[in-house]
Each structure stands twice: as structure tokens, then as C-alpha cells.
Length: 310
Length: 247
Image 1 (cartoon, rainbow over the protein chains, first blue to last red):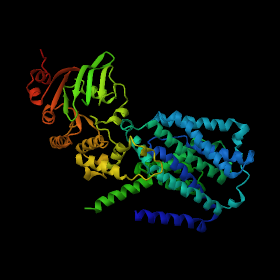
Image 2: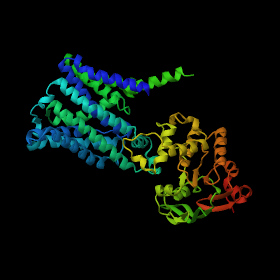
Image 3: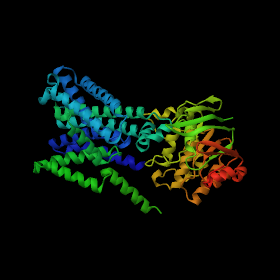
Image 4: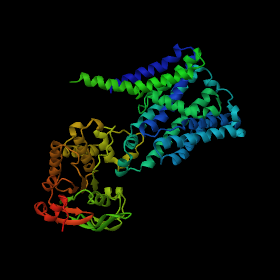
């Protein structure tokens, strides 16, 4: 327990000092990692804890971004109401997706959520009157008080830190344990008196809510949204981050988001074929550490403890 | 009577898996249901617990007609059961498996951001069940790292944790080594007498040393009933167990 407190302290210090030592452009990369970390965590709630791998979180995330930017630019509303409406829209969308998808599992769940996400992408592309079609929606620029990279980083950190704490509590609560029970044996959960679909529905709702928070942050950060934000590739990227960090570890999401975003940024400076490098890296991780980076570290530490104890 | 079955039949399409079986179990009794493969033992169990309700007949538990009640209602009334095929949560610890068994019927399962630690009451129930089944020392071990015998013990602990009045054991010793079998037998023997037990078992020797009364089924029908010693000497029972056609 003491050790965990020490780790949290170190992480908090690093995160607080980071923008003071990094050049401006890299601060915005750090901001991006924090935002996508939340998206990857929201995917991990379903994939790692409830055992249902979703491919629609890009659509949920992007919907929040669309709503925030539509509200602040076209409707001329305030940023805070915009964020609230964006998160609400994401949660509502997740509720609809959940009702349709929770009765399925495995490949069927994967494909059904993929199809649902594609519908959202299609709507964003075709409903040009509202979404701007392929042009998307460009914001009016970040609010003045958070316009510079460093301030915005701290605002993001100020949102992401309590959200992370909340999600940590969520997956380790008595309810979170029921999700892991469902992952391991649905039939047993049923015979113990649990309403399995209800638990999955609530988990999906929570997951959508958190993905919505990430999407709203992204809208302010990027100040632009287009169909590519709700595209399948976005859902896949989020899932890859969760898997690379370590599925079922929650905090691994930040490690995964960091690894993939950093790799993208460094490699793309050298070659236009960076997706190939990313693909190869991903294959290597799947072969040598299928439990993800954080999962692997945990495993090694558990093994070391076993060797050292008599 | 704690449990009485009146003329229970379970039909799957053309197959009558259980055919007009009646059975009465007294409070505190230990009863075995035996019979060769395909005799309808597990089907009868599923009818009692509500997994597959009977197509015909009546089931009364503690004075209440539960013939059509779903499994979780029966569990709430005090029926606990184990499964013939081990069905646990392999990636969770023994204690976490017990917590899930404990909270299936409590409101705490909907605590979204609360602390997962056990309450004093929960801890007492959990400790009692783990002690009765002798796996208290393995509390923090992941279930997939337990031996098969230990998994069977946990299976029983999970049925006991909600303090059932009727415990239904579906082949508790199936697939165990002789040594593990002895442990499981000893655990069942040592269970408090206020828990009524009905157990299905294939192995006659194990059963006959454990129970007060035996019901033998064959081809879905009632064949014989009696004290263990009488059943052992019963000609009809010997015939079906040895595979001879009985007269």
C-alpha cells in the first residue's frame, strides 16, 4: 500500500513538472496522451473487465466532440454547457448501443459494435447540414484562458486525474467485481442471482460516459472535428492502446496511449510509412507480451516475488 | 417436510428424462439419489433447482409451491447447489469468488464506487463457509491455480456461504482422486446437521456411508428407496448397477 502511494506521488510529480521541461509542441503531445488514455480506459472497462471487446468507442468519443463543437460554433453556446451536452450525447448513444449489443458476446459483440459505429460515421459524413460533411466542424479557437499549450495541459490533467481516480474506484468496487465475474462465467453469475444484462448495460453506460469526457476534451484540444474522428480507425486505435498497455489493468491505458502516440509522432518524422512500423511493433508486442506492457510487468514482478519468497 | 416432490416428470421432446417421481425429504435429513448413467438424476436436480422446471407434477419447498419459480427465487428461499461440472471464476481469487457468491442477493452488488472490502457480517459468513470446506488457507490464491479437488471444495463453500437450509450436491466427488474423495466425504460428513442435504452420486460406496436414506432411480423412474444397508442388499438395485435386465 505504501509502495502504491509512492508510485502515485512520483507519477503526479512527473505529470506536473513535464510541461515545464518539454518544448511547446511536445506538451501538446502529452495532452493528447492524457485524452486518449481516458478513451483507452473506457474501452478497457468493457474489454478488460466485462470481457466484451467493443469497436464503437471512436463513434461515441467523436459524437461528444461533434456536439461540443456544434454547440459552441453553430449554436453559439458556452463551452461548459457544450461539454455537458457532449458527454450527455455520448452516454445516450452508448445506452442505445448497449441495448442492441449486450445480449451478444465474442465475435458477435465485436461485429455488432463495429456496425453501430459505422452508422454514426455514415451519418456524420452525409448529414452535411449539421455535421459539415467531409469538411467537418471547425471551432472558433480555444477559449482564451486555455489557449496556450501549457495551460491547456494543466486543465486537461485537472480533468483526467479525478476521472482516472473515479474509474479506478469503479472497476474495483463491488459492482466492478461483478463485471469480472461475468467475464469469467456468465452462467455462474446468473445462477448466483445476478441480472447479467443489466450489469453489462450499466458497464456500457459508464464506459460511454467516460469516452464522452475524452471526446469533449478532444474537441477543445483539437478545435476541429470531421468524420475521421468517428471512424473505425479511431475505435481500433483506442482498442490497440488498451491492449498495448495491458487489457484489464486500467492504468495501462496511459502507457498504451503514450507508446502509440509517441511512436506515431517520432516515426512519422522519418518516414511516411509509419503505419507499417506501428503494425510491426504491435505484432512484436502481441508475440512477446500478449498481456500488454503493464500486464507483462505485473507478471514478471509476481514471478520475482515467488522466487524470492521461500 | 422440507422438500416434497409429487409426481415430477420432465420431458424433452419424445424423451421422458424423469417420469413420475415422488420424493419427500425431512428437515435435517441426508438423502442420496443414486442410479446408473441416464437414470435422470441431474434432470431431477435441475427440476428441483428450477434450471429446467418440470413439465408435470408439483414441487413444494418449506410449505411453498415453487414448481414454476425461477432459480434465483429458490436460492433466495434457502436452496443452495453445486454443479457437477466445476463452474467457477478462474481469474479471480478464492475470496473474490466467495464475495460474488455472497453478494448475488444483496444490494451491495450495485455499489459503483464503494470500497470492495468485506463488511463484518460478510467476513463472518465467508470465514464460516471456508472453514467448513477447509480451504481457508487458500483464500488469496487464484482459482485457476487450485487443484481440482480444491476447486470442488470451493464449489461447496460458495453454496454454503449464503447459509442455505437445503444443500443440493451434484456429484461432489466426480473426477477426484481417492485421497481427494476422502477429503470431500469428510467435509460433507462434518457439515452442521441443520443443513438438509440431497446429493446425487454415481459411486455407491461413497454415498452409502454418508446418508440416512437412499432413493434409487432407473430410466427416469423410481426404482427403490430405503436405508443404505437395505439398498446395498436390494436385488433390483444390484441388477441395474451391474447392467443386468431386472425382472
